[in-house]
Length: 305
Length: 305
Image (cartoon, rainbow over all chains, first blue to last red; front, side, top):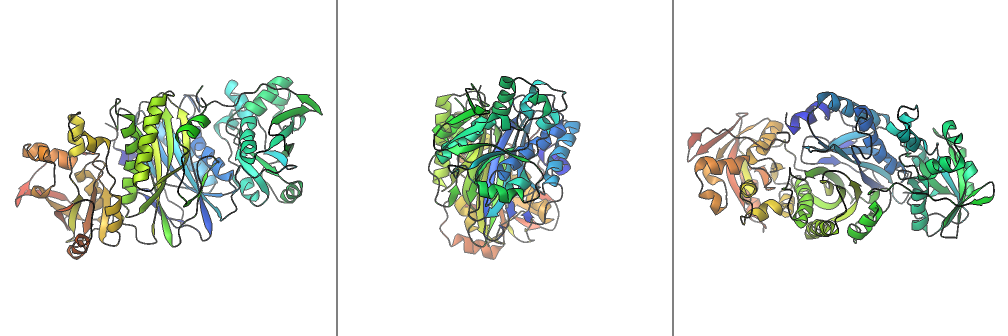
């Protein structure tokens, strides 16, 4: 079976009316909405590294889209479409059926079209997705805008994915396998958050990127970290390790002025947000627990271990 | 060394002023030029499959960009930027230095910026590049516009890359390792060509995509195929196999009315073009040599062998 048949069979479904030309030519074509900037990112999942080798192909398809939509959400933008670069060892129709279904399920849930890409044979399963979105010109929420006195906030719960990776089969595995990109929250934070990032490498490390880009520091109140009950029951050291250094949560971490946070809470949100700390002028990230300073030795996700 | 250091060290050079935000945030940001459509594609190179394992890393970097710019050129569009998804087995600084230099050399030659992407560890070297370009709304040259009586044309010479792959060390290897995306010709053909594709899988197979999309046929005059002298010296069967079924040439194959072809030739072009045949209403691709019908048994590049 040639590449063309794989694409026709599994990756050539109907596209949104906002796409002028999708799969099947040298390139795809899109007309930019008026007065918008293009937001674009690319993220790769490598089998055995970003997901266990025996992961359900449906979950791999879902996650390969979700992690990219999460990057679009972290700019405050609305996702529109993706391109898929799929490198796989052999043609396994059951696998392709499950993978493509998972990919389209995530696309459909967030109103996104698959508009192009490439399928190649490779000794190792590797999935690179490029995601595109749009945002009103000048409205993107970058990492560099955190202000002294802003709240540091996080959506949902942190540490679930890292816990699940060490306890496969636990009900939290759905948080590892099927992360939810916070597309709605991201767009609501446009014009409100002063900086934003999605948590892929661990809260402490990803917040560190905001602090570095913003030339600020932060102090986090560990008792405010929102965690699943099973993590809450762990000893302090363990749960903080999961919550602060565990990757793959794909929640949003953002900074926001107290006034804008009030405005945010007046809106209907599909995920809770928690204030976990405050931006300072210290240039460092420090931790306290019920007003007592806490020293932690954390490691974020290392892409090259 | 973490991903961030690799990106900062090798992939964070100056970007074009047309890019609002490049490497270093969740996503990149671009302002669309007025009244233009976005043209976007993604292509993957897998070590040992798309290039020999011992290929010079500089050439791998060049080619990973060039094959994508070729897809942008094949729409008649002007390339602007790329995203890189690089999966590599280990951190080899010599390799990264050569690869990034080759990538930037190709970017610089065609006025393109690296604006984002992802670096991950993987057992197998895999490079996925997404390329973006822009074209005046409605001007993109797709595969579906070929008209009966149009010339079938090809840029440059065909078969060089396939010959070089079987004769490594031959001077034609530079055509395999350093393909030239026909960016200037592609843009000149905007408004002139009725259909266009780049030759990545072999002229016969890629022209076949035009014929299928356009619901037309073609007859090719084999004596008109432009080939390097070393290929011209081969027996008919051999040279036609290279020229028609050899992949990786990244020349442009296009269809154009005789009148528009005259207009094209009045312009200064940086590569020759050759008329190799005519579009027919036959729905098939057939070959003749000095007016004698020729039957050929060709195979294009199969992505899954």
